Image (cartoon, rainbow, N blue to C red; front, side):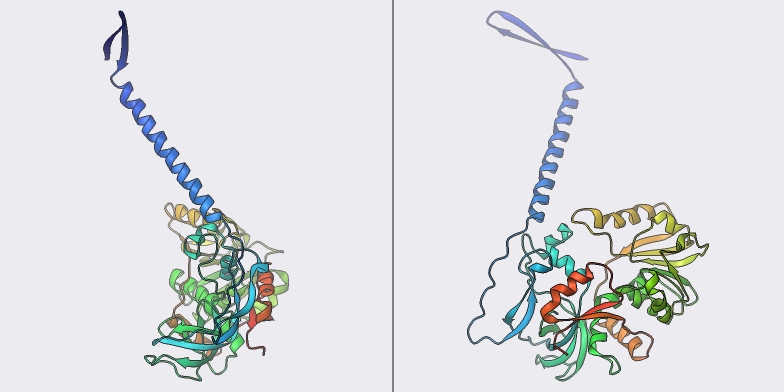
Length: 393
């Protein structure tokens, strides 16, 4: 149905016809297009904002009379060359804090992600333009030098290890109820420092997300890396049959860690092996989800640890694919973002104390060369953990 509108202007008659349905439809298109335009501008503004990187400014001086320590800091995003080794104020513990004199620290992929501020979305929490927290490092081991008046679990002289921002320094302050626990006597500071992020990630991937049980068969893709070397040993301690995947030069090492079978990915493809697994823990992501599903039992699980490098959406692709595929299959496929906890560190310390888990160390760097340690880790060629010797031993 049409509507006729008559308008007189200077003696002329103008007749305009409108369709009653056409006007609302045009209005709807305009509204939708307007919303999409606003959304597009908002996304563009967000992308520009979070990808912006500020220049490094001169390091602020330390007030006269302040007790200092050596530390590695990151005052702007960038590569290892952006890191600085300098004097900063020594931290002071609060009533519920423990002050640890750091003996050794370990580098992790998390460290170079924070160093570069990549992927860019993490800058929403880490800081826009430049890091809001300039301290670097998480995994540490050392000796308690002082405790707050309300601390009950630790005493001066205790050997401890754990995870806390600022580990690439001579001292770190940790709340006693956070990620810190006693170091076993039969474990060196270097070995203990390496456990934190890698060990907890392996434990939570296997036990919590993978729900691995004794007698089950698990495949660990990336068995020679920091997380993988712990995953092989933790899986064996849980009573599983363990198959690992690594390069030719690491086969003997992974077998020595306790793996029942090792695939040399340069010689064979585990997805064509005819095996079926209750659990696949994938640190590499070099094969498709559909290929992995071929060797995953009908009700098996796959846990994806980490993701591909990239500043924008590449690191999110495995998560999106896993969530989408899980809607259509019985197998459970998901990703993991580990959370450091004192209880899990204590559990891992128990495995170390009982000789069921050891740390495989690739190489050492002094604190002053932490940037080189991260540069090496980014090559993804490390066999086990890369350690920063903080006290020079």
